[in-house]
Length: 201
Image (cartoon, rainbow, N blue to C red; front, top):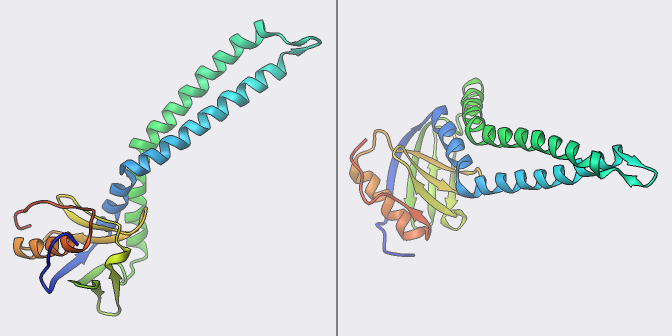
C-alpha cells in the first residue's frame, strides 16, 4: 500500500458494447502485446529465410551440389518478395487488425447482450477489493488479483491479465467520485497510472 484510503468509494456505471470494444483495442496496443507480436514476426522471418534457402538450394541441386551461381539470385529475389509480404502483414496487424477486433467485439456483444457484462453496475471499492453488483448477480475482485490500473480520457481500466480487466467508464461521474476511486487504487494497487485530477464528465 502506498497511502491510506477512505473506507470505501461507490460508483454507478452503465457499461456498453463500445466500452468493451475500446478496452480490447487499448490492450491490443499495449507495449507488451506489441512486443509479443514483433517477436512472432521475427521468428517467422527467420524461419522463412532458412526455409527459402533450403528450398532454393534443393531445387538447384546438381551432381556436385547446389549451383550457387543460380541459387543466390533466385534466393535473394524470393527473399525480397517474402520479406515485403511479411512487412505488409505486420503493418496490417498493427493498424488494421485492432480496428477489426474492436468492431468484432462490439458486434458480438450487441448480437448477444449479456446482463453480466452490459448495463448498470454498482461498483464499490473497499479494503478487500472491488464489489460488482448488477440487477441479477454480484461478485468481488480481490486487490491481490489486480496487476495494474490505467486511466484514459474515457475510462479507468483495472487490468487482471493480458485481455482481462474491469472496465470503468468515466462518463457521467463527478470529479469527487472519480477522485475517491483513484484514492482506492493508489492505496491498494502498486502499479496505478492515474490522472492527478480530471474534470467532471
